[in-house]
Amino acid sequence: MTTRALLVTSSILSENGQSNALANHFKTKTEAHDVVVTHRDVVANALPHLAIEELGAWQTPANERNADQQALAAHSDELLAELRASDVLVLAVPLYNLGIPSQLKAWFDRVLRAGETFRYTENGPQGLLEGKRAIILAARGGQYAGTELDSQTPHLKAMLGLMGISDVDVVFAEGLNMGDAQRDAALKEAFQAIDQLVETL
Image 1 (cartoon, one colour):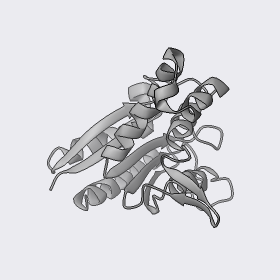
Image 2 (cartoon, one colour):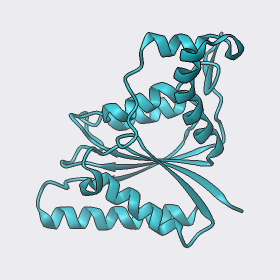
Image 3 (cartoon, one colour):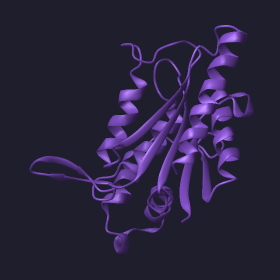
């Protein structure tokens, strides 16, 4: 049975980015498996920051949107279609100033839509994408996992959880700017963890 994976990369360093190295390893590993990968690079295909005009387009019934609103809504609709079509969401994420890249935040702003990926109920928000799985490939220059400075991991899990995606694996490659030996060991360990996860897809 074919598994459909949506791979979202967000490094501003292109092929020199370590999170992209993790993403490329994932893609290479899946070639020997029945996995179809759709790649969305939110840096090469950057989205603008969310503005009121685009939000208003979403809130306007599709059959009542003018031409400008249709164009604005199309950004989010395309991303939502990619996400809905996937079985597994893979996020390759560098750590920038203790957070996620703003380009990735712009992507999340367009897939976290009330009525589309979650809804509000009298008991609080309910995710509408239950049954999907997510893998976070986290590349960091320092060592943050498990410390109070790692606000990125809880943030990502919370946004995924809002959509109903609670089955989340995280692969950390840390200390990548702490010397060649540390970098090489961290990448080797991360690649091995990715290999094991691909076997479960």
